[in-house]
Image: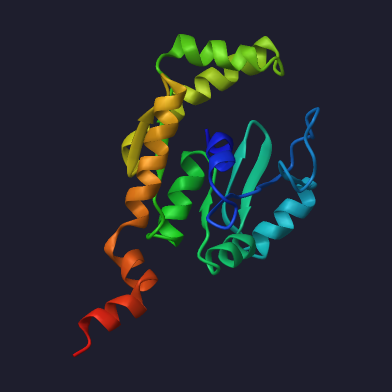
Length: 188
């Protein structure tokens, strides 16, 4: 859904974060585009250096979001999406309480299973683990600011765009964006 959104949004306005991971590269993935692929030792060193806004171990591999990269993008006024699990989202909420979170639910467990199998990348054992993990993950939905059920993709994408638009219209963002106009309008 994020990638479909990015096709409709200009890069100067919205980006997706590229996480670091210790898992192996899958066919078609490129370092720096899909993930930054690093060794377990390098990742642990980065944890010690507090280089991550969030990190987690999932299925024996580490995943993390670079603090420096996110802060640099946010400083330019660009919105950044993090495609992370509930553990990472909890860490982000602690470190960046102004961040907004969106939980995306599948319409059913059967549909989630179908989607995982449709990727054609995982064994039966991995799919079973992912399904069990997904149920555990879904139990955290109420911790998020927004909830989207991805039953109809176009509608779910429209809901995502609506959330972004509403967040951009919040008073704090609008006030700083239109500060000069507001000052002119309120001048004697």
